[in-house]
Every structure is written in structure tokens, then in C-alpha cells.
Length: 213
Length: 125
Image (cartoon, rainbow over all chains, first blue to last red; front, side):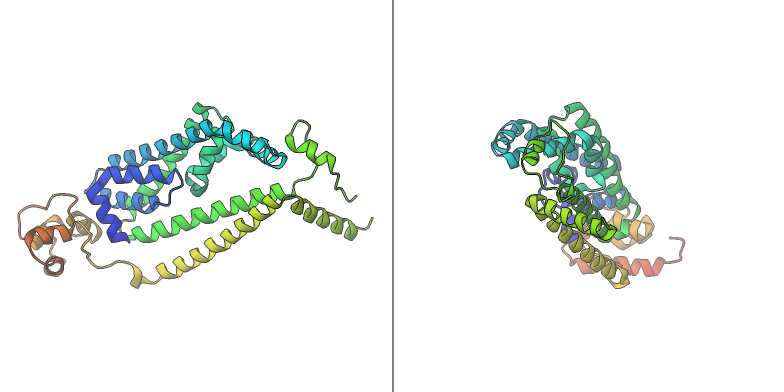
């Protein structure tokens, strides 16, 4: 696979690098990490300019983030209407919004590079939950700077380990994302029935007291 | 209430709490399965890449002359000789493309580079 992708990077250059990071931020299954690492390796060799590779990947990633956020923002009202028509859906949507309000900035930042498989979904959630555009953009742009420079930088330094870096980095990122998701779902499943006043879940739970004590 | 009873009640509360939230409980099961998947995948990759034979130590057709020079620590002079010309071929052209434009097999070109590597190794390049 490395040889085909390497040839594609050389033929289509910066457009391919920017396009792949763009689509990966929309949750499409494209090999963004391998492409960025390969771009970094060819930059080290002098085939492509390093600043150009970094810029293409960075612009693509941020553009993808903005599209995801806009989809969440535009579709958020419709989605909220659908979810709010059912009590379970309303509570679930409310909790997602609560999460975004409490942890939105750090989760947007970390989901760019540390747990990157979650990034596209947080873009939509950020838009749907009404996170301010400037705040989203600032934290997303900071996170993408780390993501892009990390992968391109690894390719630049470890020119002869392109395949290994892409394989291992993708796995570590996926593993961390799965651990983060497990923790979130565990907290959601085991949280106490009593909720602070004002939350959508409160009324529902009050109607069905379940305490064993 | 005994501490064992308290533990038992806590566990039951946890189970009941999870059962009341099938979406969260189901999501947790899927997420744990993903943790297992990535752990196994990581282990497979680590084993694979720990084998030196799996690292590409040969010159391949997808590589460019500059990449070959950088990766195998060859001077431009060695490559000039290998390509039989006075200057490095332009950037972003793979050995396969260069071989095709010259009407030779890519392996012939790779053999030329390898011969130049051997000939000029330790020659100050």
C-alpha cells in the first residue's frame, strides 16, 4: 500500500495531502496519517517543500473541521427537534450538550490529535450544542497544528519507517479513542439517578425512584 | 448494615443503573470491544515491525532519486553516476517513471544504483 500511496503523493502532491486531511475530518475512511507521514518523508528527501506539506495538511484539516461544525450548527436545530420529541432522546441530547458545555474546549483540542478518530463527531456535536464559532475554531486550530506537525514531523525524521509509524500511530490513536469512549459510556451508564435540578433527565428519574437503600 | 451488604447494594445499583440506560450500556460494550480490537491490532503490528525483514531495506520503484539518496545516505554524486548524467533527475519522479521514460525496466535502473552504491561505498562519495 505504501508504494501506491507514495506514488499518489508524488503525482497529486499538496492537493492530495490537503484533500485527505479534509475528508478525514469528516469521518471518511482515508489514510490521513500514512499520507502525512509520507509527505514528511518526501519533504525530508527534498521532493516536496516541508512548509507546503504542513500548510496543505493544516488547511485541509481545518476546512474539514469547519464543515463538520457547520453541519452540526445547521442541522442541530432539526436534530434537536427530533431528539426532543422523545423523552429518552431529549435526555440524551441534553447530556451531550452538557458534555460539550463542560468539556467542549478540551475535548475539541484533544480529539484533533490524541484521540483523533473522535474528532469528526465532536465537530458536529460542537456545532449542534451551540459552542461559539470562535472558541471552536481556536481550539480546533490549535489541536490540528499538533496533529499535522506530529505526523509530518515523524515522517520527516523517520524517513525509513513510514509504514511502521502510520500503523502504530493509527493503532495508538484508535486505542486511546476506544478507552475514552469506554470511560464516557461507563460514566453515563453508572451515574447516580438523582440529577441536579433543571436537567432534562431529572424529571424522568424522579418519576421512577430506583434507590435500593 | 454490614460492609458486604453495602457492597452488594452498590453493585446492584450499578447493574440497575446500567440496565435503565441500554444505550449507554450497549455503547460501553461496543467501546470495550474496540479497546480489545485495537489492543490485538497493536500487538500484531508490534510483532510484525519487530521483524527486521519487514522493514523495506531495498530500493523500490516507488522511491524517487532524492528519497533514495536521503534514505540510503548516498551522495548526489553516486546517483549522478548511477543515472549516467550530470545532474539529479527532477523532483517528484519515481524510479518507475524515470525507467519508463528511458524505455528500460525499473529493475535495471535499481541495479545500476546498487552497483554505484557498491562501487563508491567508502569512496568519500
